[in-house]
Amino acid sequence: MRPPRGSGRVLGVVLLVALLVSLADIGMLDLGRVVRGARNLGEFAAAMFPPDPSSLPTLAEAMVETIEIAFVGTAIGFALALPLALLASPVLFGPAVTGPVKLVLAGVRTVPSLFWAIVFVVAVGLGPAAGALGVALYSLGYLGKLLYETFDGVDPEVVEAVRSVGASRAQLARYAIVPEAANGVLAQLLFMFEYNVRASSIMGFVGAGGIGFYLLGYIQLLRYDLLLTALILTLAVVILIDRASALLRRTFLFPVSPPAPGE
Amino acid sequence: MRVALERPTVRVVGEERTVLEVRDAHFAYVRSRPVVRGVTIHASPGEVTMILGTSGSGKTTLLKLCKGLLVPQRGDVRVLGDEVAAPRRGRLDPRVAYIPQQLGLVRSLSAMENALVGALARVGTLPSLLRLMPEPEVRRARELLGRLGIGHKAEEPVHALSGGERQRVAIARALMQDPRVLLADEFISDLDPLTGAEIMSLVRDAAGEGVAVVMTTHEMDVVREHADHVVVLREGETSLDAHGVPDARAITEALRR
Ligand SMILES: Nc1ncnc2c1ncn2[C@@H]1O[C@H](COP(=O)(O)OP(=O)(O)OP(=O)(O)O)[C@@H](O)[C@H]1O
Ligand SMILES: [Mg+2]
Picture: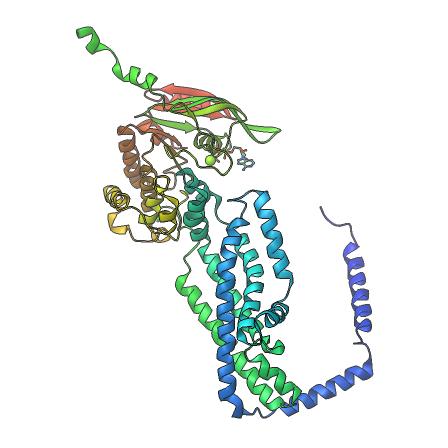
């Protein structure tokens, strides 16, 4: 069905008006303020240079902790998400099971990891353990969804073939769904880890460990030169992990399409 | 004495031991468009039954009904007298092996592991979840792959195998089930004639051991050479059901509307 003529233009005008109203509402059409902001940013940028490397040893240690938070959080989140994602898979269970499980995952996912970290700081005290648990819980909600969507996408012929041998549901999960989805699962896991490294780098804002503690401290002390060092370090680590996961993907993923007939 | 010897014993055996019995089966994915409309088929051990029909005539649907993956809305499907339909998501009867058109092999698992999938109904849940397959099953799968000519590829992941090698893996998985019925959908359509003939002789071997083979195909050459029993579907109805040496004219006639 084609939309009626001219409705595209109407939609464009509506969107433009909405954008202008929103800009005004949040104070971004206030010219004086924009100019002031630009000047402040300029000063801020100037204060960042040159970056001060004297804090590198401390920062490196904090960075290691950040990665550990992300790693532990991803691992725990994955361990919890995998069984729940299987419970949410319509191939294996009826709506009476999948419905509630999906709801729980959605609920967990709604809350950002930083907020979960605050909850765990209250529960287990300040430090990286709270950060890791916060990351774990958010990962559970997010990975759970990514995984059950991956499971839903498994080739139905493979599921039918394995069901046909008389396999139980647990066997179907173990021998058809999980191995067939392995590519996707690995990709989601790497994506989640990368995401979690970034999330973990601000866990320190709420006292939940990692490099965020220093990021916040340098901002409060107006030590933007130290801040830049920390940011460069974070960027370097994120790029490194990105590269490493690209390498992992190349090494472990198997081709999805079958070779041409008669090969 | 002499009279008894002259009896056509093969025929008696065939009639008495129908393993797969489809009786007046009806099926529609969408209520208004029935796909299988009152099909009745008997398949006997040792026989290769070939189902022909133009695209969309309901061949795949019929095989799924035979496997119990779909449940007929009218009529029934029995294997050795038992209804094959399982409760939704319940266990299906391992005595019926099913090889779907794209084979349904698990691509990231090895040939060996795929063959072992055929033994799952005999393995307890816990050991199978830990991938601890009983030694005799492993030995048998290895032997079977060897007999099918891919013993040297046993540890290769399926995605690294050729089309013909994959079909052998699919046969191995099916035979690991100790099937009484082997259902295969367009089994050798994607192969070159030589490999196709090799695979067909493996299927014949299975039939020789008393399996009732039911396969769909488009190729008349394959039908002429290997079918003991031909069923032609036309728009979900049987337009030909003939035993013995297939008559190409009659088949062509039955295929046409
Ligand atoms: N899952 C489904 N949902 C709805 N309709 C379906 C489904 N699967 C098959 N059909 C329809 O049922 C009819 C028969 O399909 P089927 O796959 O059994 O035919 P076929 O004889 O195997 O054809 P082909 O030779 O192309 O494989 C077709 O019209 C098809 O569109
Ligand atoms: Mg088909």
